[in-house]
Length: 77
Image 1 (cartoon, helix red, strand yellow):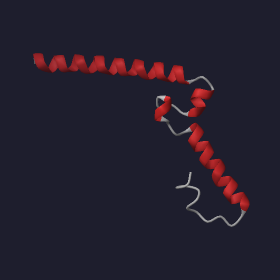
Image 2 (spheres, helix red, strand yellow; image 1 turned 60 degrees about the vertical axis):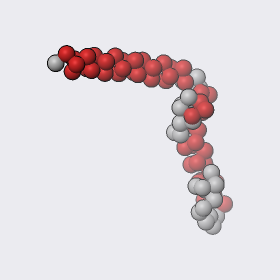
Image 3 (tube, one colour; image 1 turned 180 degrees about the vertical axis):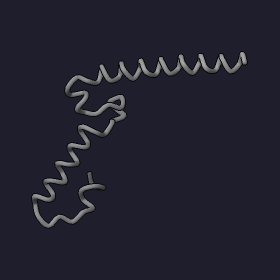
Image 4 (cartoon, helix red, strand yellow; image 1 turned 90 degrees about the horizontal axis):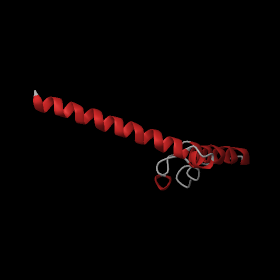
């Protein structure tokens, strides 16, 4: 927050409040946190993290299987 909010000059209190609100919105709803397995705090709070992680795992397994299949095809050819 220091690097985003404190580097600006705010001439009115409402400007600072607005910028802090924007930062909190970004931090909680858009920024992935490594300590939370790369999901947002909002995802964890609302219980969406399990669904997101399961979907990611499914996509990863599917991608790895496709790559393995493609690699085997290039070896044979």
